[in-house]
Amino acid sequence: MNQRALKTYVFYCSNNLAAGQFASLCHGLEGDTIKTISLPCSGKVDVPYLIKAFETGADGVAIVTCPKNECRHFEGNLRAHKRAEAVESLLEEIGMGAGRMAVFECGEQGAGQVIGEIRQFIDRVRNLPPTCARSGAVNKQESPVG
Image 1 (tube, rainbow, N blue to C red):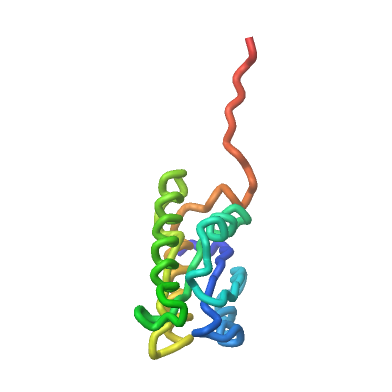
Image 2: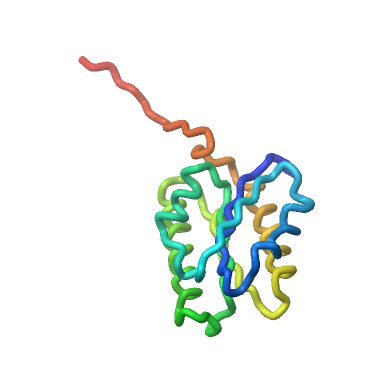
């Protein structure tokens, strides 16, 4: 199994989870970097935020929402799903491939279940080819000016 270190961003709804609940996420993921970003609602995550995470070297990005039909802000969790799908489509279009975006609903079992799902997501991302964004390299071909 590929054991390269990964950088994963996790955007989450602070109405549904507390920051301390993600502390256990870091245990057992030695060498990996997990960056958690609290939002007032998962619907506040926008496509530019998600793209910026990949531009700054993320191998994978996850969004944790409240359960369907339980969002305090009407349809925030539905917007988060649609934005994640849009970014996944963009990643595929630019050649990074699918599977680097995920959305998880925090259900009745709470943070423990979500953390397990995020760990499985990280393992799936680990098996994808590395991204070019981390190195900051741009694949340019120079042609002689004639």
